[in-house]
Length: 429
Ligand code: SPQ
Image (cartoon, rainbow, N blue to C red; front, side, top):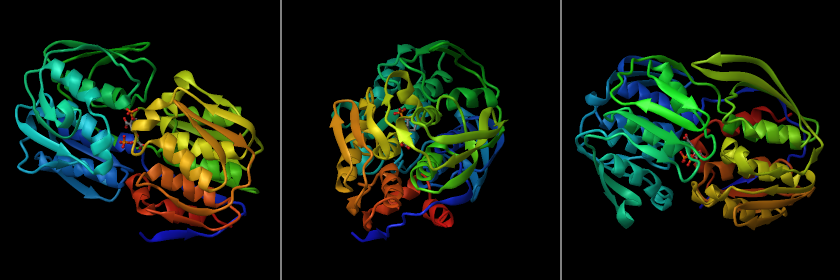
């Protein structure tokens, strides 16, 4: 496979970029547009591969979606407006698409088959299929309904009282979407707070949902109304440039329009704890989500411990935090993050394996990793392993490597950040 050559840069980054739309919120905007009544408009939608998979699945389910880059118009006819697809629903590389879609289809009285790429075929689905079956959906798939391809015939759903065994926003969201179609009130309890975009969007679309600490209550049979959604920039995408600005000497970057939802902003707390020179300015709200601009300057960093309830607030940022930790004085320990093993790749193994190839001192543990800094990174041949976040982490690492980096399978980056290299190059002085 052809690799991308990333030459040593060893300079400072400067300037301003607008962070592209949040992937989690973009998926949900299409789904809520589809299951509500009326015309939903979406602005600053992320046209990355994953979100395009969501659009394609809903079109196959009979929903009309007009797409013009970052702007969408979705013609929703409610849950009952969805129709059986003659074709398989292909979710590509997107865990969010398949798991949330299962929740919607669990209540639809027709048959659907869902499948995705090689990575999706390895990701556990039982965490969603089991509780949905308890509610009354009929679901089958490889390994007793645990893996794709999955066949689902939705039905008359009963409400559920369910304590999630893992902290997962995808499982929570799938159950909320099913619960909206059930007869009665469902109660869902999370072991730790996970991203709450689904809950916010239910309210944005006129629905009712209650939360008391980690318990969520929602009544079935609610009718959602179309809404206008402005998608904030994705803090998970901003994280790559926050790290770049902190580790590349002589940098000063402004990242505009970043979503600052507290259930997603764990990386800001960690960077502050590590001593990063980071400023949050002009906070406002868009479509019930907090948004602001961030300024990052090159920083002297120190190691830290990342564990417990903060983990779901930064789970997708751990690959880039590992790189950040290679440039911090002392030891950084990341614990309680075994969920990393079931992402697009096993992100404990891919982060540790690829960063070691660049000379990092890092070791894998059962539920995380330990990074020793500060280390001068070398260079070498690395791969994204088809995982967008690993690809971007390695591209940022190349900025501070003393030799060339050859990045294989960089195309995976378009899953969540198609303009990544354009933005990176625009910031090089
Ligand atoms: O959609 P996908 O492939 O699962 O994407 C990832 C990512 O890194 O972009 C995970 F690999 O993000 C998930 C995140 O890890 C997106 C998500 C959501 O939108 O609800 C929730 C998290 O997953 P989970 O399994 O903890 O619910």
